[in-house]
Image 1 (cartoon, one colour):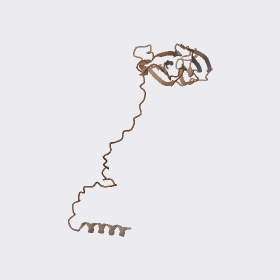
Image 2: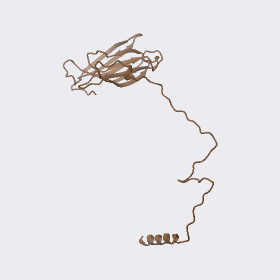
Image 3: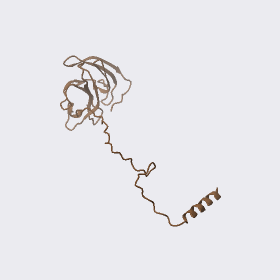
Image 4: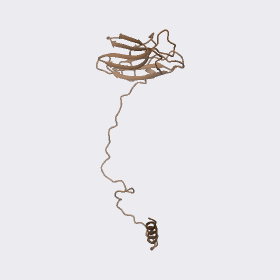
Length: 195
């Protein structure tokens, strides 16, 4: 192996000992292939590709009801779109809460009419507002116009930072308002996670 390296080094040096190196020649034709290749030229106009666009959406933190305390920030947890009014337009279901310094802040769900434009969202209902369970929403699903909400909540005996109820609510739009059509509650053995 050592002999091969020595022979290769000698041949390399010998090749460099010839006459003066000639300067590279410049050709009028672009190189083809390799790293130094010039980009191909074409007289055809470049093609334009369509850029996908999204529908403008409202700034939900400004569209929902404000939090009750000065300086308290709205927290948007989830926004879903589904036709809950059964009018053919996708309505917007916004799960929101407020910033909490301790424990947790209960959730509300605000529903906005899908036929209203994004510049002026129109609230058509608020679910869970003033709910005595103090629910923290974990899941929202819509099927055949019924909104099913899963949440953790508190009994009167539970400490403020310790939700001890597993809740399922069902709401349906009745033409002008939303009506609660079901509530199931199961007591948990320990504090349920929120936040």
